[in-house]
Length: 145
Image (tube, rainbow, N blue to C red; front, side, top):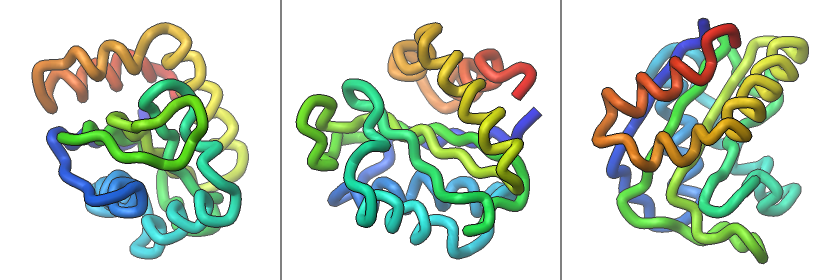
């Protein structure tokens, strides 16, 4: 079972702050190293907003060697959505952050998240009444990650 963290009603001035806050929750939980939030921002700066997978949802991550200490998955729900510059899926209100210690775990976690998202995880997270419900939805979606 991965380390699971959720944060709700988070305020962010822009996408960089939103990404840093989502990744910082993994740092606070001990799943990622101190440099992980900045590494996640660099991913978007270098590759564009490809992490905005569907309407309103960004998948925040960086390579395992950039600070992944354990398998960690976090959800950050923003108080006000932010623009990433994605032509179709902005603005983003939900950030799903993950980290892993090695490439195999990275691929496995990504696959588990993709399955969960295709099964409606984003809708369940948006409908959750608060952090406790968000945590339950995330743990339920990733039983074998």
